[in-house]
Image 1 (cartoon, rainbow, N blue to C red):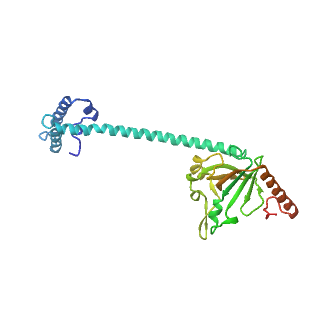
Image 2 (image 1 turned 90 degrees about the vertical axis):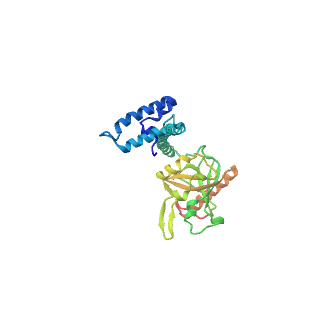
Image 3 (image 1 turned 45 degrees about the horizontal axis):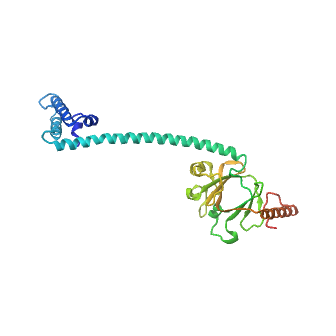
Length: 294
């Protein structure tokens, strides 16, 4: 039979489970007799097909003649209760998951708004970096290079923080660091959490898509914000805001090394900066222009 005989006779799985065998069989027999009086083919409202189905169902559940069949069909019918219970559990889990997603969206929005407020006050890195040298591999520049570069021309750069937290950048192949303004470090995302190439904005080029050095804020919120760490992280992707533009975030690169700057190192940085200012003053360059090393 395609349907369980208890179902054909109109009994629910709960009743089949709660009654003992004797009382359940009495109920089966009563239901069979009542339904046969309605569907008997000799009656004007009867149906030979329905009457045959009822006969087959009663034969399968005849406890006195075929107890094994009765118990097998009863066990299979009672299992429906567990399936319904599982369905209820799945529905409850779906509701809880929906609530969790809504709560996550609410927390993400609050976190993002708080991040923007703090970004306007300075770097979001905690604790504030002091006397640090951070070596970074500039991925966005590497993506734009037509071929790999090694040695002094490789796409590396250094972030230098003095004792007061002022930021300087020394690019690969340059001897003199440059003081940076308008750049706000946001934090790091662990290397194993994202794939930068997929997230960066692209522009068409002659040889295909060219990766920009930034991604949209919406992309960052979706892919990076859940993994953002508000501190410098070795083997982490470093992100920043630039020039108070909060609609995009810049990928500064992958942090390769973080080391403390000794006092003497800071003095050397100061000498380099003094030399840079002297070159600019005597060459007519503006503060925004980059000079070759003096």
